[in-house]
Each structure stands twice: as C-alpha cells, then as structure tokens.
Image 1 (tube, rainbow, N blue to C red):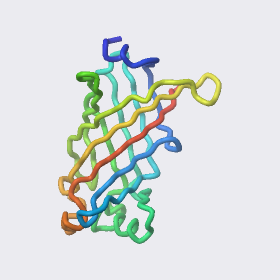
Image 2 (tube, rainbow, N blue to C red):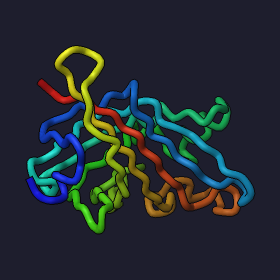
Image 3 (spheres, helix red, strand yellow):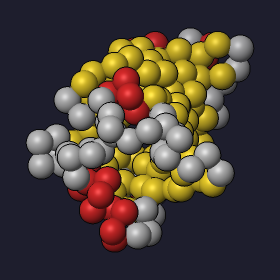
Image 4 (cartoon, helix red, strand yellow):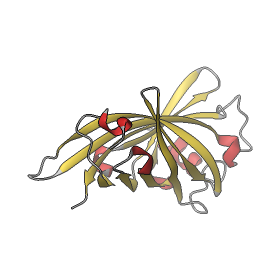
Length: 182
C-alpha cells in the first residue's frame, strides 16, 4: 500500500456495492437569490473499487432522475419535466471516475458526470468516513462523503429558467455507504 492508503485507518482494498438505503445524494440551489432549496435523489446504485494503491481506485454510480424529492410534489413534477431534468428523455444521471488522488491530506475523485445527455468533467472533494464491520456477521462496510459544485447551464439543464430565479450553481453533497462484495 502507498502512504496515502496507509493513512486511512482500517483501509480495505476491494469491490464495494453502494447501499442505497444508507446513502444520500443531495443538492442545494438558491431560489430567487435569497434562499436555499434542498433536494435529494432517493435511488442511487453503483460500485466503488478501493485499490491496493489509492490511485487504482474507481467509482461508478447511476442515479435515477425521477427519484428526485424536494419536499414539494408540484416542484418535483416541474423539475422532472422538460424545463429541467426531462426524465422521460434522460432517465439517469451517471458518474464514472477517471482518477482518485490524495493531496496534502485531502482526497479527490476526478470523473465524468453525465446529466441531461451531456458529459462534463467534475472533481469531488472526498472525506473518508471509514471502514468497519457491517451489521451481519462477517460483512464489512465503507463510508465516504463528497461534495462538488456544477453549473446547470453546462449540462443544458433549465436553459429557459433565469439564474435570478434558480441559481446556475448547484452544490451536490454525497454521503455513501457501501458493502464489501464477497
């Protein structure tokens, strides 16, 4: 193992399945420039491979676009529609990592996000939650949190909606728990 992996207590190299029940994909946007509106995607699936060397690690995740929940059914319907996500035409969001790295004690996951049919590079700033025994005997779990910020206009989302109404910047917050595959 490299120095970057040995600094993570209990680090386990392996292939992990994202546990959608214990994972959150949240976002925050400004509304009318004065308040923050939060939402989440309830359905995420994917795989995390933690390599023997951290640089050999990788992540793939798929989010079901129509699983969005902003705590308001009318707003959810609008966001699912053609003005924003257009879930009929673009049913999923997908992230595929292109690199994992540690710099000055911080972790970064570089990758490509596909949203609304457009693929763009993004970098997630990650915080390792840790590795632990799972609830069932002999199982292991891994936790990680990550954040990034995107511009919805880069992905063609909400092109007709002015940034004065809904901010162009969207903060994405991930809290992921994954189980080690047998």
